[in-house]
Image (cartoon, helix red, strand yellow):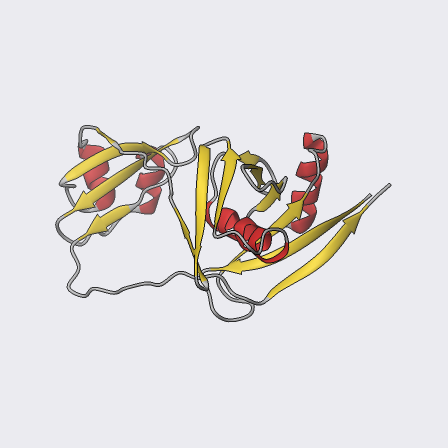
Length: 203
C-alpha cells in the first residue's frame, strides 16, 4: 500500500521555517497502531491524517507518541494540501475532529481558521503560586489546552520572575503568563507555498 505524504511549513514565507506538520491522505482509516507508527516515523510535532471529502473531511492528529484532540498548524497544513491537490475550486473546507467541526477558508494566498474558544474558569490565587511567579497575579484561570489536562492561564500587572522549580509543584501542565507591554506588534500567519511530498509504503 502506498499513501501520499506531504510536509508543510505553517506560519512562514520561507523554506525550512515556521511550524512543520506532515499530512497523510487516506480513502479509509487504517488501524490506530499504523497511524501511530507513521507519526512516530515522521517524528514531527504533529502528523495530520485526513480522509478528503468535499463536504466534511474526517481529520485526526498524532504526535510521535499519542493522538491529540486539537492542533491548529496541522489543520492548516491539511487544508493547504486539500485546497492545492484535491479541491482547488473550493474556498472553504470543513473537518470533523475530536474537537468538533473546524472550518478553514481560503482568502487569496492566506488560510483562515475558526479556532474553538475555551474560556477559562477563575481559580484562587495561592501564596505558593505568587511566590513561584515572583509576582502576585491579577487573575488566574484554569483552562483545557488539549481537552484532557488543564492549564493555568495567568495575568500579571508587572513583570514576573518565576522560579521554575517551584512552578513545577504548583501548576498542572502549562503556564501561559500575560502582562502589560509597551510595544504592540502585528503578526501575519500564512502557509509557506513551498512544501515537500513523499510516498510512504508497506506491505
